[in-house]
Length: 469
Ligand code: 5AD
Ligand code: SF4
Image (cartoon, rainbow, N blue to C red; front, side, top):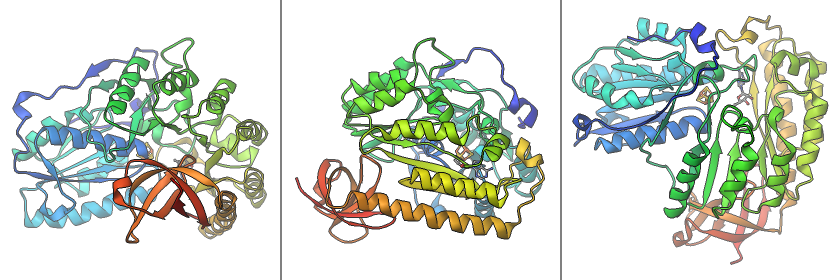
């Protein structure tokens, strides 16, 4: 058993990051023959992409995927720790799985992802969820084949979680969810340590992939016909800082841009590391999409300081204005309400910055204390009722601006990457360059193409359109 601990998870050293290559031991090659797996993923795109690697490994072992948990031989939960409700969902699911396992003890059950990295979660599992066969963390995804093998042989609760700063594993197999859009990790972990956030503890230290490895992956995706790539990282703007002297995200984007993939996105940006060079690279290159997700979290300087965000509302607005000089750019954000100590006045500052930025859309959250983070030790003096009220008021404002942003492109022609059939018969759906969802009539042979679509109706959360060419 390897149990995670908060103390080691917090460590950051100057030690070099080890890069190792994945390889599947021959003995596991047909482990999944005639067997099905069910995988449930919670959380962010990073976790979704980890799940694509998990599926890649399982497919390599000849498992096939099922959407029906009841018919699976192997059940895996890839979990998220970001807020309490993500925890509750995963624990709720474990309750259901426990019943299944009572009727069929041969099912192998595993849990992985960010929750696995939490000391508190592991002790809860040890007390209440001993029926699990194995638990592994974000640092050793590649141990899955071995754990599945042991599980199929009847292993009892094997906890295999490392609290380390982290390596980089290359050449992982991958089964991607889309044939047109792909995620690519460019940087793992996070060293920002915002006081409310659990990610630096669950995902380890900030470590960039070698540019050669990233460019090679992009080239392969282009060969396979991918139209869009999204570069992933908890803080993509820090790309390269741990590896190179003179090579940052802007340089990587430029190099990828030259490879001629139609669409390049990147998420998530921390306002702290956003350089002028990056603003210019977005402005000057057509295939780097005019879309930036720029979490503000709060509009109050007092709260930003308590959050450890390293910028002020003034410097955020300055960056925002620079980005807005890019024609037709869409900027979205994340906002937390009800952080400890947030007064009505602080909340007004948040409403003010939303009124200033008029975001195309925003993800809004009630602050959720995460075990062992510095903010969780602050006195939480905002009542739940007050937090809910603030969230409601904020959402009203955010939705008003989303609708306005959608209305601004009414009657305009947008490039839309068609992703699939929508629920309405005879209709397709896709996303504009600025990541807006569009539904429009069309034949399914058009899926995977980038089309010109005229926007004919704007709602708060989606658009209707018609194909122009
Ligand atoms: N409580 C509420 N929201 C949080 N986020 C991160 N940590 C917390 C927390 N403890 C939000 C932030 C972040 C997004 C991914 O989740 O807004 O940008
Ligand atoms: Fe959730 Fe953060 Fe982990 Fe993503 S990195 S799965 S958002 S806790």
